[in-house]
Image 1 (cartoon, rainbow, N blue to C red):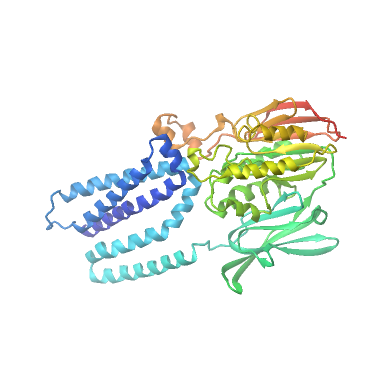
Image 2: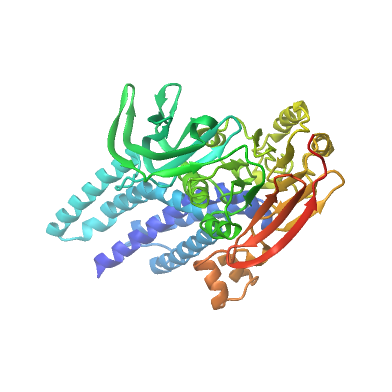
Length: 539
């Protein structure tokens, strides 16, 4: 019984020590919002209290024996610290699920070596001496093996035992050609094979002549080479890059895909998706209600937050590859959530984009893509003083002003945030939009779906999700915002959202009208269906 109590006390102490570390990670990901909702400095105060509680638990371990004389009975200290440890664990859980649910998983996985080291050290110091001699030797051997394994995992990263392709390929139209992107579940080198002109060709994912090692892979292919091609993707696992090479392992291959894209075709059926926030598994179901699609617009906010490239693989490439069936192209637009993590601009370059504002001409339409950044001022509290979009926006505006007016095509503007037409950007962007004779502007972000008719263009807001389909979070039950019932529990644990919507844009061959539709994944009923007359004639 004495040994059990000692082990239990060690576990509680580990929990107390890990809590401030976990809290620091969780609040570092989302503390501006939480501090703003409660009071400034709340997260740092909790961090200090968790540190004090960790010291309490260490105190309990040192003075556990009854022959030690202390002012406060040890059981009271242990009981109080135990309650605090459980309380702080619940706070970390609620904070994590409210701020960054998916990111927390990566945070916890990253802390596993630290957790193991703390547990092993405390166990060896305080619990192991209570075991009998023979049992002590066995446990010591297990601890030694665990320490070696933990150190190895920390040095060489925890990687999946099973190596596989994590996604099907996603074909992006980037304006100068196609960028085909896919992901693997561990670091690898990768390549694509396709048939063109009666011969099979191989293109490696590489940069400046060197095969690129990572979990995101992409290759560039010219329009004419890939417009009607059978192709497959391949990857070879990399176990570590050396100055002159890499330890390569298992190779995996995909099935064959057929990509068919007639960029000269007039009369198109376009789908637009935005704000799916980790729920991209609903995209294919929504897209299936739109008939045979020619193009999909990816309008931003694909995930709540990003803390690793693997989240790009799971929340961007995988979902859209499934929605496009790897057979039609997509155009990528960056949302405000894609502006919130270190290194994300490098990720977009890995997907084939040199900039996040560019043009794509296809199907008699010139799509101009803008980057609305965070869509708020750089001083906005939520971003913790990390934004510097003011200069970036000026550079983008100069590029926008330099674009020539094209009257021989149907002009369309794509931008994540278009509510009230880019109030953050200001009047100059709107003036340029009118100068460039944009027939329509498509955006997401708002959580609403509507068509706004301006004097010089139409604004199609395709919000991605509607308020009635929004998620229920655990904190909603604590604050009383939601009642605890079977329906709301289902929304928490089974499907965060009741439904997901998508936009559909139909443009006939003569480009005389535009039909905007909103469809839901679980209903054939159209939430919006509006046909408007094109404003500017094609010359």
